Image (cartoon, rainbow, N blue to C red):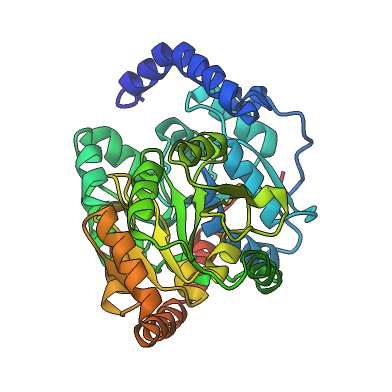
Length: 425
């Protein structure tokens, strides 16, 4: 408790500012202003009797959790899975993935103060919990340990940069890692960094994102997209971040011929209108996915302003430029593009997905370049080289298929901690 005291006091001091930031973000994204009580441990929904808790902070973690949630529902058919999030986009993603499934509930995880964590655990009484990737809350995990609720960190990844930050607070980090009952790491390097910080019972289970299957309507939706676009070649800028769109649009305007179209899909939906203004400022003709109209021949940029259709965007594109990798954001998941046979081009900043990016490049499924201009140029060259394009597409499919099975390994590790979980109360 003494080890966590400075952290707790910092949270108490920061809480008013956190709330103000939440209200400020709500001006641009109204979803932040909904379900406010849940962020303080107040829940209106009635808690089921048997609850498995899975925390997926935002969109990426929620998509990664999909195969595991489905496996949990199959393995424990009498239980309900409670998905907790920290962002409205994560919450909306879980609705899209599990629409209509009454055994999947969702809410916000409260801020990390002991009173809020205790209220969350008293209300839902989970038998055990799973935290996706690296979202660690010291007070919440301490509360779980006191109440005998085992928690596993699944699909865990920890970059060298993040490991150095955690190492600056060795006592708090070791205490937090020690509160976890098990950790399933994506790679041996992730496992080594976690163990060095004090984690126990760490196993390499692989990356669950390899187990994500395209939705059943992917082919039909991609066919719809291609029908609206017509015969033109399509470059896809996928999951782009603030600052990257301007660079990509400038490079595209300079380098791409009129017969090539750019499909631009920002990572965060609250930025759709902002990105549309960036396109207009460059004099490029724009249409939106949400218009549900045939794309005119003179349209240069098609704005992907929809949620839950990323697989279809990848499947309808000829080459994908992966967002988050052109400025130092750490990159985004490129497995989805590889799984549908779309060649990938990434920039220099992939530290959040280092192993996957390196493996994809080594497998011949992806190209790494150092600048946006070089990325757009490489993508345009692939459009002209059908043989190389076909080789990369096939390499991507093989790459995505070869590393599946992480969900099964994670479930096996989770079954061990579930045996120690308290019975439903």
